[in-house]
Length: 344
Ligand SMILES: *Cc1c(COP(=O)(O)O)cnc(C)c1O
Image 1 (cartoon, rainbow, N blue to C red):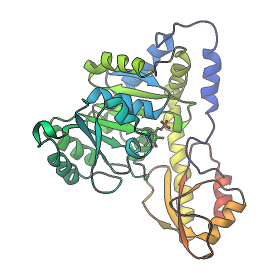
Image 2 (cartoon, rainbow, N blue to C red):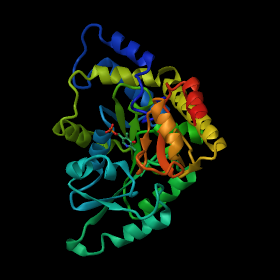
Image 3 (cartoon, helix red, strand yellow):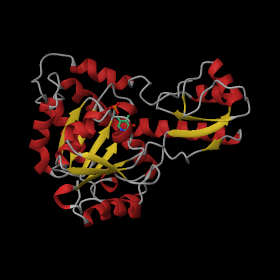
Image 4 (cartoon, rainbow, N blue to C red):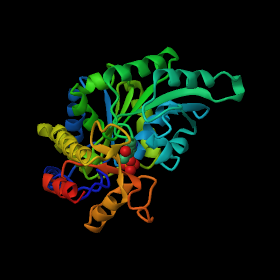
């Protein structure tokens, strides 16, 4: 009963098979492998962006920090939500790689156009003394499991474009959002105004690969230099390419995300039936819910694994409502979810 995160699950067997196949013979290093050509074509195809620049790195933190570093100068500020992974969970890598600072747009996990505009207006108006306005970074799926609709994305991008600011999407759970919205990758990105995407793979079945996709090819060479300087250019790069190629072949990326979201829906419906309270409406593969300590103890004792959210199991009051986060990946079986629910 593993609901800790979608990176505690296994690598998809088809990806492991592809890695074994990629392990035959010789390939040129540093991204000159033949499979990277396939990956570039696949990503350009799925994004309907024949000139997109496509790169692979091994962590989402690298993807975000390096992508943002090409969008921004050290004297600028990056606008993001207060719960953004780039703010809370990357140990200042974005600040390190960009040299810039982050400005938190007040509000919840989803930025609103009004709050973004107020934040933009609050910066860049103190001449040489203050931070200059820089990129906007949007997380899709958000860190609280919500999904921006296409029109919400469009409205945020419109505000950023009014001030000529570039827009980055942290898509660690890109495909979970995509299948939830049932739209095309182009519609969720460049057609709305997104300039660069961190296109996640690790949380959806890969061993450790994220793509960075630039719709503005003029950034390509700078990204290559920054990736190398930042120590994220893999020499045996074919093992990154092989994972991503397998992921995008035969719709594995879509099937995995649909399965993860369906698992989450099944779990959420069961939780709702037991009277659990939801902190956020689950829209992809993450649930933030509250239920009594007694139930958490029972689950914990039976071996269920998940994170409590700011609360602790210790405490005398069995009826106290404790918050938790439950994440479903593609691999968790219905039997495990049903066992969790029956214990609850
Ligand atoms: C998991 C995650 C990342 C990537 O994290 P790494 O541990 O660096 O791979 C980035 N953004 C969000 C929103 C995430 O959930």
